[in-house]
Image 1 (cartoon, rainbow, N blue to C red):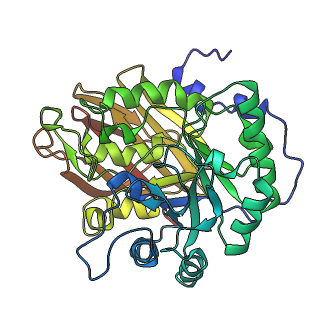
Image 2: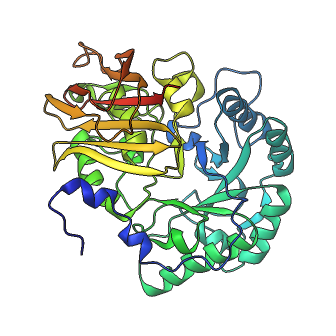
Image 3: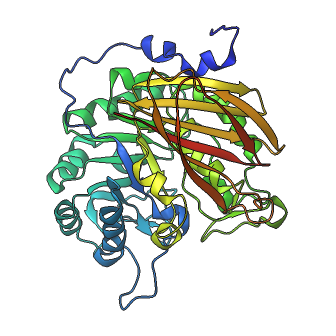
Length: 404
């Protein structure tokens, strides 16, 4: 039970993590949190090309090159068109067959070639797998992954929280650590603090997230994001399909499996990268949706691990502001529900000194053009109080850099 006279304290608290056992292994220096591509969410988009898109080198090269150009740490090898990258007689992503073999890529894909190319470009590879494709032969699968040079995996479709599944997930984490692999649990129950015992658990889902905008008739509203922030976020890192850069007014929303739409403003989406904690944040849209677009430069630099968290403002089901420190830099994200409002926010959580503030806010016309934002730069100090003008479904994000 967590009790406080200030709701933000519940989000700041590490009590759930601290109740878990510390790790038995001391050397976790091989772990590298970061941001990753995830082209399944955008519908496996590539531009018009001279090669056939699919589970092949060229399609993955397109996303690896995007990651390399923009400082993204990981590219996710998933498959293409609803089918996995590994050989299987299953009917799609959600099942495995009698002859599914995660150690054998489909004939069109050379995993070693992809890993070698990514390494040359300074990008690491992780893969998507159905949990039944690796279990119970974890040693066989993980040995091959490590041999190829894969750094981790999204393990999907676990969909249970009974004792057997809890034990299976711990077994996966333990065996993955032996092979220096990180785990991203998707289609799984909420966090329990286990990432203290096994720091290679980077994130887990346990929430209704933006993948549902691909098929949910009404889409996920900004109100839903607030609900997740005040409930699921208390448990720990949340695996969300962040990065949708096609915001639309709620009245114009429609389901699109390819190039999904978002409800809420682009500033709301930027704020989500600070409000929602995950050590492997997705940049899930396709390259042309980002490059040259306002706000993308923030996604390129926002960290995924933090040294300190403060919640300066928040009101249940209305809005929340989360400030997170990385070294001496502070990042502040706010997400709002569907009611426009102005909120005053004191910067008194900052240590003494002056700071250069880079500030992204909702533009004046976001009710009709929710991808519009305003970027401004100013000098501030801990004595300042800022007014956050939040649009319906809006938000804001700040980067505060201490001046020398």
